[in-house]
Image (tube, rainbow over all chains, first blue to last red; front, side, top):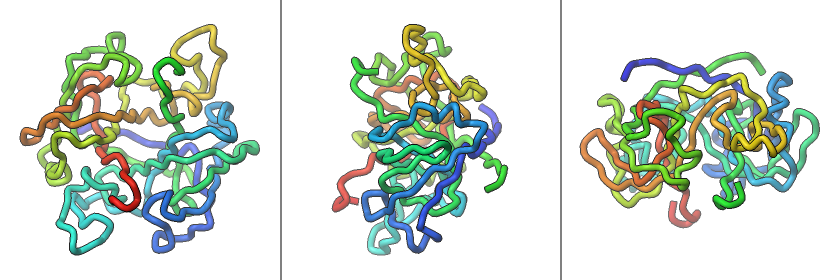
Length: 138
Length: 138
């Protein structure tokens, strides 16, 4: 075990009508608007097989989140006890990686549009993964 | 848009009988053994509310994966066409973050044991998140 750190590089960015965190819902299924992922030209081959209708997991870097918060009142509800962030979906956590389950609605060159995303405009995109299907269909 | 990179810090490590990638299954539900997450003392408050029976998503850094691979034959099956990695679960991808859905089976101080994990011994752990429940139960 050591103290090594690892360097993430954005593969793209979120384009969204959500301008700031105060206007963003907590989760995609709580009223998040459609949004687009704009990929960097140099990673486009990685996105080549993304197609409308696919259900995917988008990983983002929640660049405005605090990283020194280890426990929170879930959903900022002060009546709920302080809870270790690994048992919550708080964006404040040591490595603020956002995980968003979305459906692709359109693909146009480097722009992939998804049905709903709670990340704000300009959020770095780290990765896209297909939702795992049954073992026999992989 | 800029070229900013982001620094990940391991919050812990995987302890597993899987010594190398050649012995690891592709996914947890393809025969992966139980494993433990060993958290760093300084992040323990973040893990304080993890409990046996909880279903969680473990995020890892697949430190042995190549990052310059943008397309692969899925599951190394050469009869399948080259596919952009964002449409696959290949570990080779620009940001090799592993995503593992597991059930916690035991918690003992800084050691959290899970039912099955395909990551090899020594893999850095980045985050743990609860599986999202229904909107009314969050």
